[in-house]
Length: 102
Image: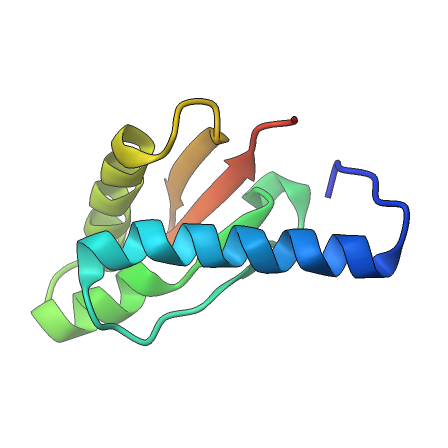
């Protein structure tokens, strides 16, 4: 994360709030699908990532990368202005999120 926190607790609260917000945006697209949102493993992959496109692709028998691209476009349009600096689809079907600095 590029953000600095005064304590591990504040970091955990931030991460929890971000995961909840991202899940709400994704749920508007995929409905009742049991997907994960988690902190990305490296900054090159954003701050957060989701596997929602993989699960939706399996359900709809479609290409996960195409589903991820659609999710990234839709979430970019619907997210509050300035919430993300970037939302990007990445092979083989992840959606990565970069949080805008406050």
